[in-house]
Image 1: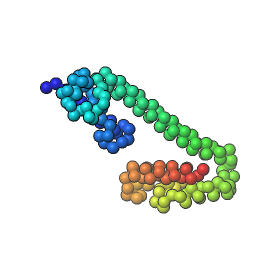
Image 2: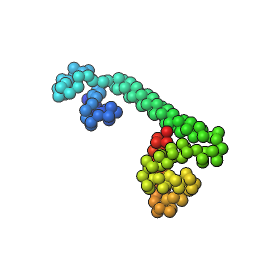
Image 3: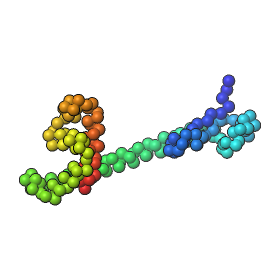
Image 4: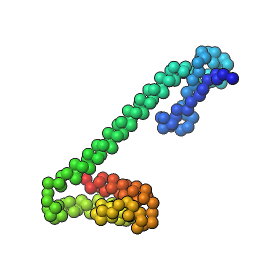
Length: 162
């Protein structure tokens, strides 16, 4: 049996509720399709042919690739901000950094915004230089759990450090 038409739900691509945006694709003429399936006329004002549907898919793939590129730029930009903040203090000697009360205040404030368990893991990883595996072994937890906790704490710390 030959397909008359195909209906695709593209509402997820537009972050809308399911079945809110449906697309009808058919190689039949629109009038002929409405004659065969009259209930489609009320639901679909336009019908894509196979070529138009393929064009839509290509454009959508290109758009998603472009969005992914912009998201990666944002991630790289945030990493650049982190390194800029760290490089500000690179020219100072270690004793000057340790005696810098402004820096101490910023660090204490940023640490105070963290919850106790993530703060403990964050400090174990960055000040005691323990690996995620070592922390996980101490706490009898999964390494992935420790990694995610430390990374979340790191992001929150850096956000509040500035």
